[in-house]
Length: 392
Image 1 (cartoon, rainbow, N blue to C red):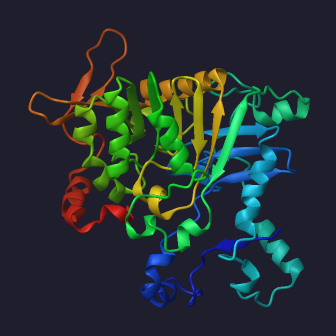
Image 2 (cartoon, rainbow, N blue to C red; image 1 turned 180 degrees about the horizontal axis):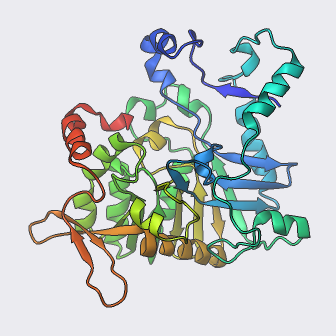
Image 3 (cartoon, one colour; image 1 turned 45 degrees about the horizontal axis):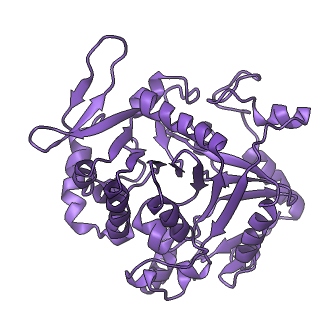
């Protein structure tokens, strides 16, 4: 196994404190990161989406787990994905892990044995039936692979990745000016397709801070009479509460523009088994996607926030298929119906959260951030004036 690190800390790597101490004067570089998520096998098949490689992204964590969205990719676009990987693997900003981490005194055999000990444990935290299907009724991927019968939808696709220079070179975006306008960037293409919408836009993003550019897109789309709905995390669901400070500044204006806003409810996700067996583990949204006019699909690593637009490098795929668009529309619909609050402006202009009721019961109206305590809300009020939006 070969591992390379993108934009590593410059020195003092043995301890957390020394890493930061050595990096104080280099903060503008070290807070930038490669945010890409890409998995390619044999240059034949790949997985695209927003999922990181950690327990909580596979329903294997005892605390909070994430609801994510991926697509399995085969065909002519896969070599393009491999080339995007190679651009990063061979980037001058990438270093072999052996050049940064001391090898220690263990032999290769001892290292292998330690690795096996660390990675051996219960096969899965929440056992599932071997023949269980996903939200769309599809078999587990392993079962279809074993049978040699993948159910693929053939369609045109385009894949894009930001250049590695975006995170480290002195670009216009890095100075807080308009973001990268390269036609190969993820942001450029996402804005292009969003602004070209004719009927409807549906988005999911765990971190939502539209900023000036995002609000311009929303105003343009709504001004053309196009419906716009966004699903994101509530304060109770987010794992980045500071990001919520930036997000809440835009909620009233988005609602006044007619955007349908939905926020994920950990409690509702726990109560339904539609998204997986969470047990006592709360659910959080992590999928980054969009459906445009029910015929164009975006799935990738990019959030709708300044960090993704200005500081991170991202990767994404656009799929031109009404059938795939219908599948993602259904997934977003399940989240909205069974796992989220809808936001609205009350008579006084204050935000209200609507919790849909089942049967003939009336919907529940909430007037404070749902499923949160006073301390978590007060902390945001205390920190709000101190947090620059560009770093969220």
